[in-house]
Image 1: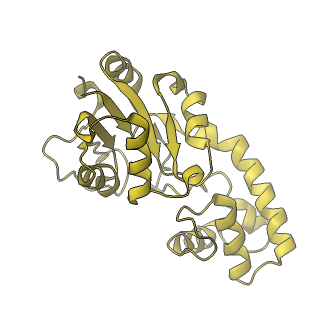
Image 2 (image 1 turned 120 degrees about the vertical axis):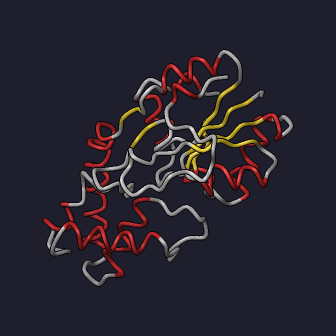
Length: 230
């Protein structure tokens, strides 16, 4: 095995909240309510979740956070373009201040990366709604030096499980795909799809850790990093 490619969020770094949600809104969802656009945090989060499945606004498949927020406010008929821009700007400022402290390393990840870095080259291939934030969060939590490169969907303009993001990673590693192991928590994006591109893959099972997650269909799923070594 020459390369190991990791998913970032909820694989190396956890960002789900107490309900298991990964919408990124935990520390900022009160702001549209305070602005009078939604009657409750739950109503806003529901509207945002519904909007995530719709690509209203741009050709790129990965819809950036500020675009999602702005279009939810405008298309719900609750805000003018100018007021939506002001609120989005405020929310992004608060997000930048609060989000880093809301994420945390998965248990045992540093020892696992140290062991693997002695045997293979490591990189990250991540979906995220803001460019360069996976790398920022890895560096913020002391993991940045382990990785040769980080590909994120917002910067690339394509997201897992679309072929372009795996092809971009394979171009960077420049080895036979069979010499690449993909590791992540999303079964379709991090296991099934990489295998269609010729890579090996292992599923990180978060069942019992992240609310709402089903048991892995894989017999050799990684349930704790202590069990994942070269």
